[in-house]
Image 1 (cartoon, rainbow, N blue to C red):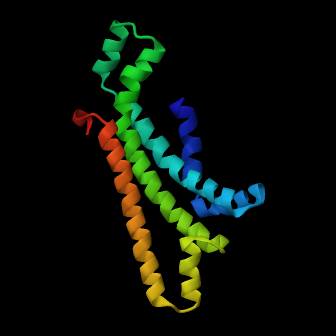
Image 2 (cartoon, rainbow, N blue to C red; image 1 turned 60 degrees about the horizontal axis):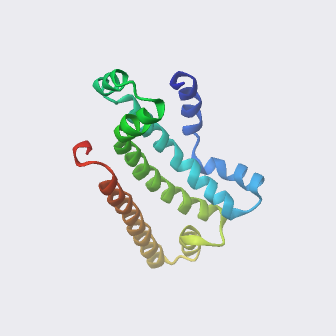
Image 3 (spheres, rainbow, N blue to C red; image 1 turned 180 degrees about the horizontal axis):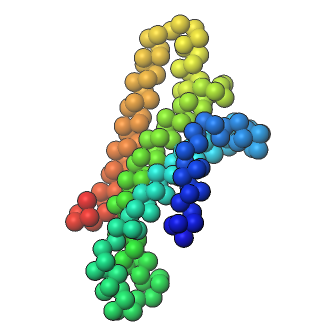
Length: 163
């Protein structure tokens, strides 16, 4: 499955998220769903790639024990595969949420009318440098908050020995 899907994922992953915006606007005909699509397309690739790495990194001993115990597919998934991949999944989530925050600010600059991205672009066009600096500070602080929020959830979910 990896050999079949990886080339497709690698091609789609390398398309800049903002390049998807015109297609999303044409298909969805509104800026809000289009922005959500840009967020999704930006976040999904680091999550998929990190999850794939997490599954590939399952220790062979775990797989052997699962075979010896004749675990069902469902038990194998919930007792071996998922717990082993969770730290990687959260790493992908942290990367994905950070990239999504960057992409949505940029998308708002292009779509216009609403959001912090539009605010920054409007301030630039009006030569209000102090507002741009204030907005950039806000963007950075929100990015930090989002990262810390995902890290906090990860600290509650990921077992201490898996970090």
